[in-house]
Image (cartoon, rainbow, N blue to C red; front, side, top):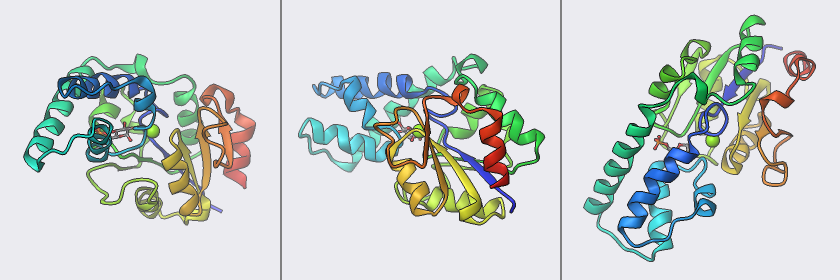
Length: 217
Ligand code: G6P
Ligand code: MG
């Protein structure tokens, strides 16, 4: 059966969490909220709007829509200045090798990300050419753990969910893949991602033999 492969972006292909952290910390700091790395962990895979709401909850702050919109713009403007410095060196270890293997064996490949900055990031790190389809935060209305983003990617790749394989670093993303009936592969800490069908600390741990079994499953 024909397979399809869907990759999350942030934390799977590139380590953008550090930039999201710096940008959110500036917003939180301005509001007198102590925003730590631990808090930032909980924002992985979470949409921009939802992330702000969680930060405001942390500080017990009720804000008007107008204020919130202004902070969302500020946060992204700041994030864009970090993005401007990104290049191929930001691609996480082993990612290109896996993408190249899938390309060489003619597997359909899509991106399935909550980020509205997905396309420019893929362009900056020069791997956009690997992707047959890109589904990002501009295309979906329901954020992970809702399976919409992955179901949309599978549909665009003309592949049934049960033949679709998802690489994800967030708990919400793994849940989205599982709900969609797809094969979920966690990238990161096995304890955190225990709901995933397979977990690897990073792509260097995924060997060709494992990729072969996924393709021929
Ligand atoms: C990913 C990241 C989140 C980020 C979200 C939206 O899921 O893990 O930290 O908030 O994308 O990204 P954006 O680039 O649209 O602000
Ligand atoms: Mg992610």
